[in-house]
Length: 272
Image 1 (tube, helix red, strand yellow):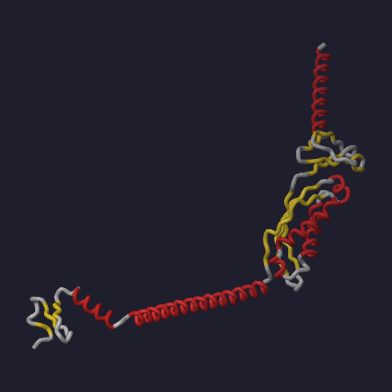
Image 2 (image 1 turned 90 degrees about the vertical axis):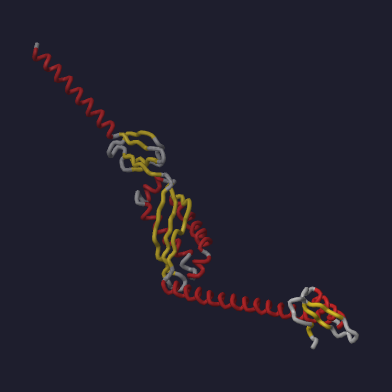
């Protein structure tokens, strides 16, 4: 009786262990595709045509392998050395925003390293095609236009491969040393020319001011000369004498003035 109970207990433990192992194997064979992901399924070495949406799926080696793919917007930055039309090397810092749209096709044709294999090489060729044909000066002055052209070329190239290019940006631009020196010399010369032009304009303004002052003084003198008369001068003289309280004017028969000062003076002015 005791042996039968021990055997029953042992069988229960075996069943429990088997159930636990089955549960662990089941969980380990389960693949979860999260939001922002899609799954690529392969059965007996052949990829399924349709990608799997988010959810939980059983994955059994050889029978069914499931690989999750990130289909969110991703960012890729690269430093590129692009030769210009003059043969000078322009260093460009670029950033591209993209996301995979045809994950099954990418898995079949390229693999999980599709960014390095397809996107990077196409981006380099695009910049060489669009920017490499331009002079350095055009690259500087037409940077926005050239970036838009490169974006269109890259988008049209990547679309059929299953990659959607959302945006392309040039975040940095380093010019060749020889061209930078030429720009600095040109800026220095332009600065000197602007300074000399400013000085010339200032001198012209100063000359105009002096001419205006001289013209105004001459016109004022001419007005004075044309309006003054002997009677008016005599009037001004008499008015000035009247405004001086220390001077006494006495008219004579010869119209020659005789002056006497106030008490502070000792005698008449002009008398002997």
